[in-house]
Image (cartoon, rainbow, N blue to C red; front, top):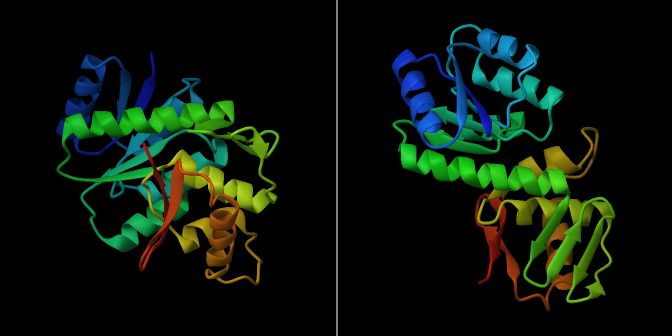
Length: 225
């Protein structure tokens, strides 16, 4: 059974979300603040996913997300918050979250989001991803399309693996730069465009996906049925 940590200072919402998750096959643990969440995490409980609010007394969700990422780079982290501004979303993704929902939330949609995040986490743990005739092996950094290996640099592979792990999800150039370039890199965000052009050229014969430009934002992978 998957264990989910719910960090939400609204007592009623916390109780509602936990009860809903428990009825749908999960084991949910609710905490009203980040310090209580730390106690649960450091107490030995291994969680499979974390749901967190942003605005909470004491330590906020942004700092909590950064701390979680220092401890565990793979656990799915979902923000559920009343903040609907782009700056908060961008700050959250830069802190390491995987998804973002705005209150009031639909519990059925929450369940769908959780399922998608857990599937992506499984992909990350197995370090193996298949999209149609394309197979990516993260341990070997190899890309095999219909039996033919496509040569990729480490950064090209990492960018492609990221996009295909989160189909339809748009990533900003800054997000990708923060994750795949060193902090002291002299490259600008437009460097990402160069890499995307190279990936499109190398996978021009692949009909199973395409890398789409999201104007004014960045890029996403769209899978073809």
